[in-house]
Image (cartoon, rainbow, N blue to C red; front, side):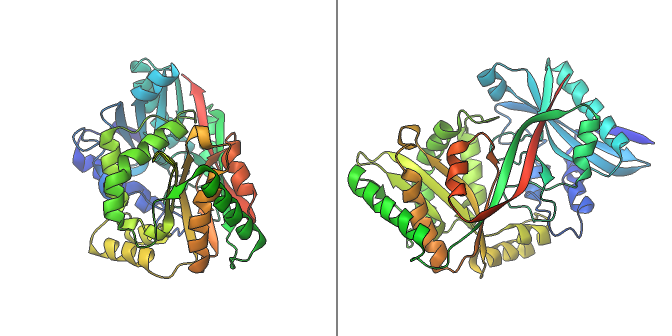
Length: 380
Protein backbone atom coordinates (compact mmCIF):
# COMPACT_ATOMS: atom_id res chain seq x y z
CA UNK A 1 0.00 0.00 0.00
CA UNK A 2 1.31 3.46 -0.99
CA UNK A 3 0.38 6.58 0.97
CA UNK A 4 1.61 10.12 0.23
CA UNK A 5 1.71 12.69 3.02
CA UNK A 6 2.16 16.44 2.75
CA UNK A 7 4.65 17.57 5.40
CA UNK A 8 3.78 20.29 7.89
CA UNK A 9 6.21 19.93 10.80
CA UNK A 10 9.95 20.18 11.35
CA UNK A 11 9.95 16.61 12.69
CA UNK A 12 8.54 15.39 9.39
CA UNK A 13 11.11 17.43 7.48
CA UNK A 14 13.89 15.55 9.27
CA UNK A 15 12.57 12.40 7.61
CA UNK A 16 12.50 14.25 4.28
CA UNK A 17 16.13 15.36 4.68
CA UNK A 18 17.24 11.93 5.91
CA UNK A 19 15.63 9.80 3.20
CA UNK A 20 18.34 10.23 0.52
CA UNK A 21 21.00 9.44 3.14
CA UNK A 22 19.31 6.09 3.66
CA UNK A 23 18.58 5.49 -0.03
CA UNK A 24 22.19 6.11 -1.09
CA UNK A 25 23.88 4.59 1.94
CA UNK A 26 27.15 3.00 0.82
CA UNK A 27 27.06 4.72 -2.59
CA UNK A 28 30.33 6.65 -2.85
CA UNK A 29 29.17 8.67 -5.86
CA UNK A 30 26.38 10.43 -3.95
CA UNK A 31 27.02 13.91 -2.52
CA UNK A 32 24.35 15.06 -0.06
CA UNK A 33 23.23 18.62 0.52
CA UNK A 34 23.83 20.25 3.88
CA UNK A 35 21.38 18.45 6.15
CA UNK A 36 20.66 21.44 8.40
CA UNK A 37 19.67 23.66 5.49
CA UNK A 38 17.40 21.01 3.98
CA UNK A 39 15.40 20.28 7.12
CA UNK A 40 14.80 24.01 7.65
CA UNK A 41 13.21 24.59 4.24
CA UNK A 42 9.73 24.04 5.66
CA UNK A 43 10.14 27.07 7.95
CA UNK A 44 9.58 30.39 6.07
CA UNK A 45 11.67 32.17 8.68
CA UNK A 46 14.66 29.93 7.92
CA UNK A 47 14.04 29.23 4.23
CA UNK A 48 16.13 31.88 2.46
CA UNK A 49 14.02 31.51 -0.68
CA UNK A 50 10.64 32.20 0.93
CA UNK A 51 10.67 35.85 -0.18
CA UNK A 52 9.98 34.82 -3.78
CA UNK A 53 8.88 31.18 -3.72
CA UNK A 54 6.23 28.95 -2.17
CA UNK A 55 6.69 25.23 -1.72
CA UNK A 56 5.22 21.99 -0.46
CA UNK A 57 7.04 18.82 0.54
CA UNK A 58 5.76 15.26 0.20
CA UNK A 59 6.82 11.87 1.53
CA UNK A 60 5.59 8.59 0.09
CA UNK A 61 5.20 5.56 2.35
CA UNK A 62 5.07 2.02 1.03
CA UNK A 63 3.87 -0.57 3.54
CA UNK A 64 4.55 1.92 6.32
CA UNK A 65 8.13 2.71 5.30
CA UNK A 66 9.40 5.90 3.62
CA UNK A 67 9.86 5.08 -0.07
CA UNK A 68 10.15 8.47 -1.81
CA UNK A 69 10.15 12.23 -1.46
CA UNK A 70 9.29 15.23 -3.62
CA UNK A 71 9.34 19.01 -3.28
CA UNK A 72 7.22 21.24 -5.51
CA UNK A 73 8.26 24.89 -5.80
CA UNK A 74 6.23 27.79 -7.14
CA UNK A 75 8.98 30.24 -8.07
CA UNK A 76 7.09 33.51 -8.41
CA UNK A 77 10.24 35.42 -9.39
CA UNK A 78 10.91 33.20 -12.37
CA UNK A 79 7.30 33.05 -13.48
CA UNK A 80 7.11 36.83 -13.39
CA UNK A 81 10.36 37.12 -15.35
CA UNK A 82 9.40 34.52 -17.97
CA UNK A 83 5.65 35.06 -18.15
CA UNK A 84 5.15 31.35 -17.52
CA UNK A 85 2.93 29.48 -15.08
CA UNK A 86 5.37 26.70 -14.32
CA UNK A 87 5.92 24.78 -11.08
CA UNK A 88 9.26 23.16 -10.37
CA UNK A 89 9.82 19.72 -8.92
CA UNK A 90 12.89 19.33 -6.78
CA UNK A 91 14.51 17.01 -4.24
CA UNK A 92 13.00 13.97 -5.93
CA UNK A 93 14.28 10.67 -4.58
CA UNK A 94 12.56 7.32 -4.74
CA UNK A 95 12.99 3.56 -4.56
CA UNK A 96 12.75 1.67 -7.85
CA UNK A 97 8.96 1.49 -7.88
CA UNK A 98 7.26 3.62 -10.53
CA UNK A 99 4.00 3.42 -8.60
CA UNK A 100 5.61 5.33 -5.73
CA UNK A 101 6.84 7.96 -8.21
CA UNK A 102 3.37 8.18 -9.74
CA UNK A 103 1.76 8.72 -6.33
CA UNK A 104 4.28 11.44 -5.42
CA UNK A 105 3.75 13.35 -8.66
CA UNK A 106 -0.02 13.05 -8.45
CA UNK A 107 0.16 14.88 -5.12
CA UNK A 108 2.72 17.40 -6.38
CA UNK A 109 0.88 18.13 -9.62
CA UNK A 110 -2.41 18.59 -7.72
CA UNK A 111 -0.73 21.32 -5.65
CA UNK A 112 0.71 22.93 -8.80
CA UNK A 113 -2.73 23.01 -10.47
CA UNK A 114 -4.29 24.51 -7.34
CA UNK A 115 -1.73 27.32 -7.66
CA UNK A 116 -2.82 27.98 -11.25
CA UNK A 117 0.23 26.41 -12.91
CA UNK A 118 -0.03 25.01 -16.44
CA UNK A 119 3.30 23.12 -16.52
CA UNK A 120 5.76 21.46 -14.17
CA UNK A 121 9.48 21.08 -14.87
CA UNK A 122 12.55 19.80 -13.09
CA UNK A 123 14.51 18.78 -11.29
CA UNK A 124 15.00 22.51 -10.67
CA UNK A 125 15.94 24.21 -7.42
CA UNK A 126 14.99 27.61 -6.09
CA UNK A 127 17.95 29.40 -7.75
CA UNK A 128 20.78 28.54 -10.13
CA UNK A 129 23.12 27.60 -7.25
CA UNK A 130 20.59 25.07 -5.93
CA UNK A 131 20.89 21.54 -7.28
CA UNK A 132 19.27 21.13 -10.70
CA UNK A 133 18.97 18.48 -13.36
CA UNK A 134 18.52 14.70 -13.36
CA UNK A 135 21.59 12.64 -14.12
CA UNK A 136 21.06 10.67 -17.36
CA UNK A 137 24.71 9.88 -18.18
CA UNK A 138 27.74 9.36 -15.96
CA UNK A 139 26.45 7.20 -13.12
CA UNK A 140 29.91 5.74 -12.47
CA UNK A 141 31.38 9.13 -11.51
CA UNK A 142 31.03 10.90 -8.16
CA UNK A 143 28.78 13.91 -7.94
CA UNK A 144 30.34 17.26 -7.17
CA UNK A 145 29.22 19.55 -4.34
CA UNK A 146 27.45 21.77 -6.88
CA UNK A 147 26.14 18.85 -8.91
CA UNK A 148 23.54 16.16 -8.35
CA UNK A 149 23.39 12.38 -8.37
CA UNK A 150 20.57 9.89 -8.82
CA UNK A 151 20.04 6.28 -9.76
CA UNK A 152 19.56 5.45 -13.44
CA UNK A 153 15.94 4.35 -13.01
CA UNK A 154 14.79 7.91 -12.16
CA UNK A 155 14.82 8.76 -15.87
CA UNK A 156 12.60 5.81 -16.73
CA UNK A 157 10.15 6.71 -13.97
CA UNK A 158 9.56 10.33 -15.01
CA UNK A 159 9.43 9.50 -18.71
CA UNK A 160 6.74 6.89 -18.00
CA UNK A 161 4.75 9.71 -16.38
CA UNK A 162 4.88 11.78 -19.57
CA UNK A 163 7.80 14.13 -18.86
CA UNK A 164 9.81 15.25 -21.91
CA UNK A 165 13.28 16.74 -22.23
CA UNK A 166 13.40 20.52 -21.83
CA UNK A 167 17.17 21.23 -21.61
CA UNK A 168 20.40 19.38 -20.86
CA UNK A 169 23.50 20.36 -18.95
CA UNK A 170 26.86 18.70 -19.65
CA UNK A 171 29.78 18.24 -17.26
CA UNK A 172 33.43 17.67 -18.04
CA UNK A 173 36.57 16.47 -16.32
CA UNK A 174 39.41 18.74 -17.36
CA UNK A 175 42.95 17.36 -17.40
CA UNK A 176 45.13 20.05 -15.81
CA UNK A 177 48.56 20.49 -17.43
CA UNK A 178 51.39 19.73 -15.01
CA UNK A 179 53.84 22.35 -16.27
CA UNK A 180 53.56 26.11 -16.71
CA UNK A 181 55.56 25.66 -19.92
CA UNK A 182 52.74 23.65 -21.43
CA UNK A 183 51.80 25.20 -24.79
CA UNK A 184 48.16 25.91 -23.85
CA UNK A 185 49.12 27.31 -20.44
CA UNK A 186 51.65 29.66 -21.98
CA UNK A 187 49.11 30.79 -24.58
CA UNK A 188 46.53 31.62 -21.88
CA UNK A 189 49.16 33.48 -19.87
CA UNK A 190 50.30 35.48 -22.89
CA UNK A 191 46.74 36.41 -23.84
CA UNK A 192 46.02 37.43 -20.24
CA UNK A 193 49.07 39.73 -20.12
CA UNK A 194 48.15 41.35 -23.44
CA UNK A 195 44.59 42.00 -22.26
CA UNK A 196 45.71 43.41 -18.91
CA UNK A 197 47.95 45.92 -20.66
CA UNK A 198 45.55 46.75 -23.49
CA UNK A 199 42.50 47.36 -21.29
CA UNK A 200 44.29 48.20 -18.01
CA UNK A 201 42.68 45.26 -16.22
CA UNK A 202 43.61 44.38 -12.66
CA UNK A 203 43.40 41.17 -10.66
CA UNK A 204 42.45 42.22 -7.10
CA UNK A 205 43.15 38.87 -5.38
CA UNK A 206 46.47 37.30 -4.49
CA UNK A 207 47.32 34.14 -2.59
CA UNK A 208 47.74 36.04 0.69
CA UNK A 209 44.35 37.75 0.51
CA UNK A 210 42.21 37.26 3.62
CA UNK A 211 39.13 35.53 2.24
CA UNK A 212 36.76 36.68 4.98
CA UNK A 213 37.52 40.34 4.44
CA UNK A 214 37.51 39.95 0.66
CA UNK A 215 34.14 38.22 0.44
CA UNK A 216 32.59 40.52 3.02
CA UNK A 217 33.69 43.52 0.97
CA UNK A 218 32.96 42.15 -2.50
CA UNK A 219 29.94 39.83 -2.10
CA UNK A 220 27.38 42.33 -3.39
CA UNK A 221 29.47 43.18 -6.46
CA UNK A 222 30.05 39.48 -7.14
CA UNK A 223 26.35 38.63 -7.02
CA UNK A 224 25.43 41.71 -9.05
CA UNK A 225 27.79 40.37 -11.73
CA UNK A 226 26.26 36.87 -11.48
CA UNK A 227 22.75 38.31 -11.76
CA UNK A 228 23.74 40.18 -14.92
CA UNK A 229 25.66 37.32 -16.54
CA UNK A 230 23.15 34.56 -15.80
CA UNK A 231 19.93 36.52 -16.44
CA UNK A 232 19.35 34.90 -19.85
CA UNK A 233 20.09 31.31 -18.79
CA UNK A 234 17.44 28.65 -18.27
CA UNK A 235 15.55 28.91 -15.00
CA UNK A 236 17.64 31.63 -13.39
CA UNK A 237 16.27 34.29 -11.06
CA UNK A 238 18.08 37.22 -9.42
CA UNK A 239 19.77 36.51 -6.11
CA UNK A 240 18.05 38.40 -3.30
CA UNK A 241 20.05 39.93 -0.47
CA UNK A 242 18.79 37.21 1.86
CA UNK A 243 20.00 34.50 -0.51
CA UNK A 244 23.33 36.28 -0.98
CA UNK A 245 23.99 36.55 2.74
CA UNK A 246 22.98 32.94 3.44
CA UNK A 247 24.99 31.55 0.52
CA UNK A 248 28.12 33.45 1.55
CA UNK A 249 27.71 32.19 5.11
CA UNK A 250 27.48 28.61 3.80
CA UNK A 251 30.59 28.69 1.60
CA UNK A 252 32.89 31.03 3.52
CA UNK A 253 34.56 28.09 5.22
CA UNK A 254 35.52 26.39 1.97
CA UNK A 255 36.92 29.28 -0.11
CA UNK A 256 40.70 29.46 -0.56
CA UNK A 257 42.42 32.59 -1.92
CA UNK A 258 44.36 30.53 -4.46
CA UNK A 259 41.09 29.39 -5.99
CA UNK A 260 39.35 32.72 -6.59
CA UNK A 261 39.78 35.44 -9.21
CA UNK A 262 38.25 38.94 -9.30
CA UNK A 263 39.08 41.16 -12.26
CA UNK A 264 38.44 44.91 -12.43
CA UNK A 265 38.55 47.28 -15.39
CA UNK A 266 40.44 50.59 -15.27
CA UNK A 267 37.39 52.34 -13.76
CA UNK A 268 37.30 49.84 -10.90
CA UNK A 269 34.22 47.95 -12.12
CA UNK A 270 34.13 44.23 -11.40
CA UNK A 271 34.02 42.53 -14.80
CA UNK A 272 35.21 38.98 -14.13
CA UNK A 273 34.83 36.35 -11.41
CA UNK A 274 36.03 32.77 -11.09
CA UNK A 275 35.74 30.34 -8.18
CA UNK A 276 37.12 26.85 -7.64
CA UNK A 277 36.57 24.58 -4.63
CA UNK A 278 38.65 21.82 -3.16
CA UNK A 279 36.72 18.52 -3.57
CA UNK A 280 34.00 18.41 -0.91
CA UNK A 281 31.89 15.52 -2.16
CA UNK A 282 33.76 12.72 -0.36
CA UNK A 283 33.71 14.59 2.96
CA UNK A 284 29.98 15.35 2.63
CA UNK A 285 29.31 11.73 1.67
CA UNK A 286 31.05 10.54 4.84
CA UNK A 287 29.19 12.90 7.18
CA UNK A 288 25.82 12.81 5.40
CA UNK A 289 25.92 16.57 5.03
CA UNK A 290 25.70 16.98 8.80
CA UNK A 291 28.05 19.64 10.18
CA UNK A 292 28.70 18.10 13.57
CA UNK A 293 32.27 17.95 14.87
CA UNK A 294 33.07 14.95 12.68
CA UNK A 295 31.53 16.60 9.63
CA UNK A 296 33.43 19.85 10.12
CA UNK A 297 36.66 17.90 10.64
CA UNK A 298 36.11 16.00 7.38
CA UNK A 299 35.36 19.21 5.49
CA UNK A 300 38.45 20.99 6.82
CA UNK A 301 40.56 17.96 5.95
CA UNK A 302 39.16 17.98 2.39
CA UNK A 303 39.79 21.72 2.01
CA UNK A 304 43.26 21.90 3.52
CA UNK A 305 44.55 18.40 2.87
CA UNK A 306 46.25 17.05 -0.24
CA UNK A 307 43.94 16.59 -3.21
CA UNK A 308 44.42 16.08 -6.94
CA UNK A 309 40.98 17.26 -8.10
CA UNK A 310 39.06 20.53 -7.80
CA UNK A 311 35.55 21.62 -8.67
CA UNK A 312 34.97 24.56 -11.02
CA UNK A 313 32.10 26.30 -9.24
CA UNK A 314 31.53 29.53 -11.17
CA UNK A 315 32.93 31.69 -13.92
CA UNK A 316 31.27 34.94 -14.95
CA UNK A 317 32.27 37.81 -17.24
CA UNK A 318 30.31 41.04 -17.70
CA UNK A 319 28.38 40.91 -21.01
CA UNK A 320 30.23 43.86 -22.56
CA UNK A 321 33.54 42.07 -21.93
CA UNK A 322 32.59 38.56 -23.00
CA UNK A 323 33.96 38.89 -26.52
CA UNK A 324 37.31 40.34 -25.41
CA UNK A 325 38.96 37.27 -23.93
CA UNK A 326 38.53 38.12 -20.24
CA UNK A 327 38.07 34.42 -19.28
CA UNK A 328 41.79 34.05 -20.09
CA UNK A 329 42.63 36.56 -17.35
CA UNK A 330 40.54 34.60 -14.85
CA UNK A 331 41.91 31.23 -15.91
CA UNK A 332 45.52 32.43 -15.93
CA UNK A 333 45.55 33.07 -12.19
CA UNK A 334 43.54 30.00 -11.16
CA UNK A 335 45.27 27.62 -13.59
CA UNK A 336 48.73 28.72 -12.44
CA UNK A 337 47.78 27.95 -8.83
CA UNK A 338 46.34 24.57 -9.78
CA UNK A 339 49.57 23.64 -11.55
CA UNK A 340 51.68 24.79 -8.60
CA UNK A 341 49.58 22.62 -6.27
CA UNK A 342 49.90 19.56 -8.49
CA UNK A 343 46.16 19.39 -9.26
CA UNK A 344 45.49 16.84 -12.00
CA UNK A 345 41.77 17.26 -12.70
CA UNK A 346 39.06 19.90 -12.56
CA UNK A 347 35.41 18.88 -12.51
CA UNK A 348 33.13 21.40 -14.18
CA UNK A 349 29.59 21.77 -12.96
CA UNK A 350 26.70 21.67 -15.38
CA UNK A 351 26.87 23.93 -18.43
CA UNK A 352 23.78 24.31 -20.59
CA UNK A 353 24.23 22.78 -24.04
CA UNK A 354 23.27 26.14 -25.53
CA UNK A 355 25.87 28.09 -23.51
CA UNK A 356 28.42 28.11 -26.33
CA UNK A 357 30.74 30.64 -24.74
CA UNK A 358 31.54 28.47 -21.70
CA UNK A 359 31.42 25.22 -23.67
CA UNK A 360 33.95 26.63 -26.15
CA UNK A 361 36.16 27.65 -23.23
CA UNK A 362 36.22 24.11 -21.82
CA UNK A 363 36.63 22.58 -25.28
CA UNK A 364 40.00 24.31 -25.48
CA UNK A 365 41.30 22.01 -22.72
CA UNK A 366 42.15 18.32 -22.80
CA UNK A 367 39.04 16.78 -21.24
CA UNK A 368 36.32 14.16 -21.25
CA UNK A 369 32.61 14.98 -21.24
CA UNK A 370 31.46 12.38 -18.74
CA UNK A 371 28.15 13.51 -17.24
CA UNK A 372 24.86 14.81 -18.56
CA UNK A 373 21.91 16.14 -16.56
CA UNK A 374 18.41 16.80 -17.86
CA UNK A 375 15.55 19.10 -16.99
CA UNK A 376 12.16 17.61 -17.89
CA UNK A 377 8.85 19.37 -18.50
CA UNK A 378 5.22 18.23 -18.54
CA UNK A 379 1.96 19.98 -19.31
CA UNK A 380 -0.55 19.78 -16.48
